[in-house]
Image (cartoon, rainbow, N blue to C red):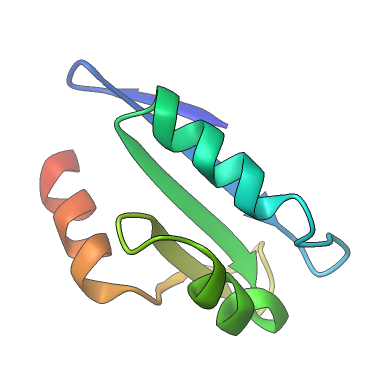
Length: 86
């Protein structure tokens, strides 16, 4: 998913419980080359692995079920993204 906001492009990668993380590293690196911000939204079972895999500049959000609201897992990065979107 791509979000356009205030002349910036943000990439959002969603990983559900059924997804594998095997391609995540390459996906995130490609997104960082092309987009201003990168966000990974993952099912709770993936959160700890996602946090270990992706660089600090990537925001990570997790949810018990992706249909529920998401909670920030990298608060500092998420706060910066939230301030940009206000």
